[in-house]
Amino acid sequence: MKRLLVVCTAILMSCAGTPSQKPSDMQKNAELLVSESQGGADRPGFTVIKNEQEYQKATKASSGLIVAELGKEPSANYPAFLKNKKVILYNLGSFRSGSHTVTTIKSVSVKDNILYVEVPYQESGGMEIQMLSNPWFIFAVPSDYQFTSVELKYSK
Image (cartoon, rainbow, N blue to C red; front, top):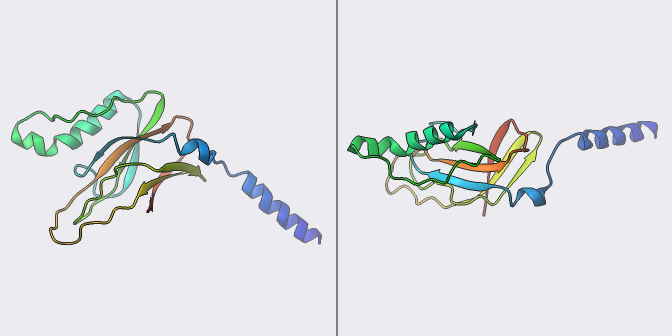
């Protein structure tokens, strides 16, 4: 009986020590700033953008890839950098066909130092036209969120 009590106490203590934010607060705190279908990295990953210069560099480098070849200035008007939030650039990786841009963020949550970003699942158009794409998006979460990795969760 003592052993059972010790095991139950250990389980409760391990659960209580896990940092996580309240889901009700998190669902309304994510903000999608930019979403593009081209210009991202070949592999999935994230970067925390620390200041306005990094934000401008990320958006100009990605949006100017095709336009720079035409000799024109990129004309995308992105929202201003949010100083009171943590801004994250997330690269989805490389895809051979279909549309993989993120159009909205349903919710965010932090558990075990992982930021989970829930986005709607979109049916890809199939294999009629194959085009290599490297989609990326920039979003903001409250500055007090503490995480070491980001994972996308697709939901219907």
